[in-house]
Image (cartoon, rainbow, N blue to C red):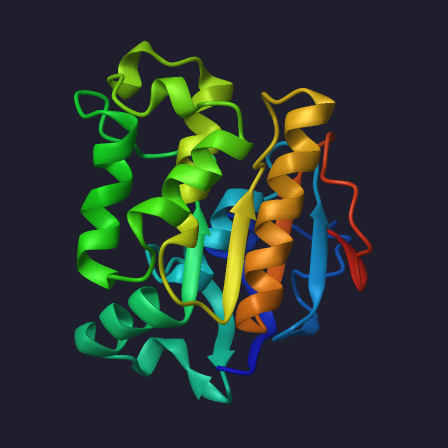
Length: 214
């Protein structure tokens, strides 16, 4: 997939509003593979909704979202499965980890489906992110910041053309934010992928190709 195009897109909940000022909603916006984008937003402006619309978890929007010119509303269940397995990966704001499983088990569930990374590569990421000692700990015992790092690793154990990261460093200190940014951008570069990061304040310090105000 080379592009994601938003054509006059707007969440249905905003349809009656006449005061929308946005670089994304009700605009023509093309996200290109290989480029890095920052979506800056205030709380309640539809940041997480945008990610859910793109990944196909929600369809309560007006306008269109096009993947290489193909209308997302016309995708079949099989199409969406393939898209999520091979073309778009999402790091959820709420993480959606399995609390009763260990950090490594959360990663292995996905990697067993994709077979994309070796155990050694995954362990290197745990080490770099300072959570190697948490690999066998149940996720429910980890801090939110530690869980964010686990969720980031999970997002990377698959092929993707675009990586969506919804507030990925909201609970991280500056040093861990830098490490996460490095790992994320290196993997995206290796795959030739685009990155879309959302933020309501703190965000990764990256050379963004474009900053969009939601």
